[in-house]
Length: 396
Image (cartoon, rainbow, N blue to C red):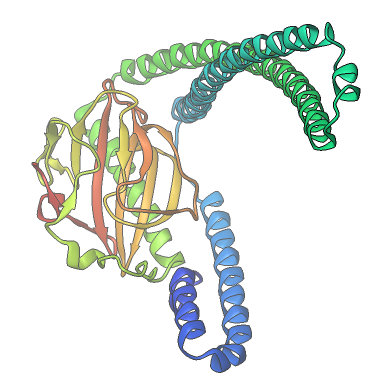
């Protein structure tokens, strides 16, 4: 009995659209149906979260047969992926921080220009007040025979006094804004310095892990193996992947297609590749030096750290290290269709996360024992490998 049932009815945003239409066309009906719809949506959301939790628990219990060196490689490459993901986030924070400092400095410069203009205005008003003071404006007012003229003079001097006071207040406000901007610049610079220190520390740890990985690979590759031993190892890696996919198929049912998007089966021949790069191995071609081993997907060459994009919308059902595939991410697109992305440097999504078509899900690497960075990409339907060339546009 499948344990992973997700949203039997329309997605939440479709429900929201229906409710909005109801508000526009049938207010009395909506008043009766909204509570029920809301309860059903909350119930389905809780059910989905519970089933995602069960899937995660199932994946935690997934066991792989690995040697001691392979276990060490898993730990090392997983740590490299985590450190690289953290470093990328720190670099984004530093870039945002530097942009914020530039904006604050620009703001402070504009405020300083305004402050200088206000100083000049206050100086002009003070000089005018001084010149008027020599004539003693009270005498001027008291010597007037015309009461109307006297009232106008009184209003005039009151206006000048208010204008001077207003200019002084604006001057003080500008001073406070400059002080605040200066404080924010200092605080942002302190945060930037901390982020740079964290990034440098991450870089040192990353270098250590990469050196450890190099040593582990040398040890693994240095073990003399006969052709039959290499074949047995490759077959064991393939069996591990098949076991994982079978476990996932048993744990999930069809995931509904997001409203407005094309069903995966209908997108055949129109899907993009997850990234651009030379195709190093094609589906069905010989894998390694043994004719009995065939590729069940594509190997696409790309620079380390290049973004890998989801070929179609779906939910992440696996995001972990797997023997022979390295850091592997699997997307479920519904109706039994899966897409696989292997040998990554880092994984950007967690199990249970929805991703949109074209959204970055990982970065290219050489995990799983590769000597050069490349992406393993495959498509499965109900466990059966499909030729990506029949589903994706290999050029353009």
